[in-house]
Image (cartoon, rainbow, N blue to C red; front, side, top):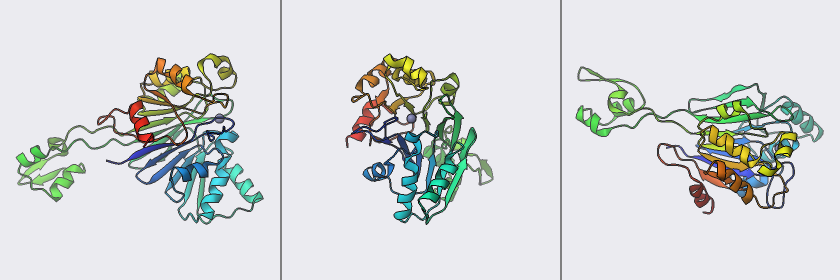
Length: 320
Ligand SMILES: [Zn+2]
């Protein structure tokens, strides 16, 4: 079992409030860190949540609006001052590279680690044997990328009783079968499918960035274990949401429902909402398993075939 943790580093859109930092979401999977958007003062939130500054890290920027990217420069400088030595990968739309280069030039920021900035196109952005990250253009006032983090499927269950019945001794032959390779034993070929169940799904996390809800996004977010979706406005401000290319709580919930996603985490709230409970309530009417994200909310995402991720499970983990 590989732990996959979600941490909300900031849940405010446009301007911060006294208890909400600007938007940023983190995933930590097996010591690797993935950050989606970098609102101002992200370093402080990372420190508060013990995220660390020297993990293998990939940063994804949704779009070139200040509330999503202004924290990036400070973060890069802080990482350097705290003696980061691992390379840092940054992905985002056109403009990310110029933003960093010109500002680092103005402030004469020298880094003691390698910075790799990639201006991306829609589609596959990062691929390893364990996971893939995809970007999709969505519908905001400027180019915005929504992202999905998709884990590779896991091997099926290993049935010890079946292996024992075949008389295969424990040890390297078991490991071979478990890793998906066939073996030869006493003149017989034994395949993984003879002793293992069907492969099991990995986890899928969707992150919207700033967007209107769209049909193609619903498809992109299909069957997310967790969908982190912007909910800038409450449902009674739909006209404003349309005008500013954002989503309401009800619209975010509709995307969650129609994409058959499990848990919906609302975020990127307008500063006009001191309390986001109302937005959560509106979302729950459409998609029951919805929760208004708050800064420093953090929880481990279980595999869907092992445990259902519910709102109460998230709250219980966050209050620990
Ligand atoms: Zn925004």
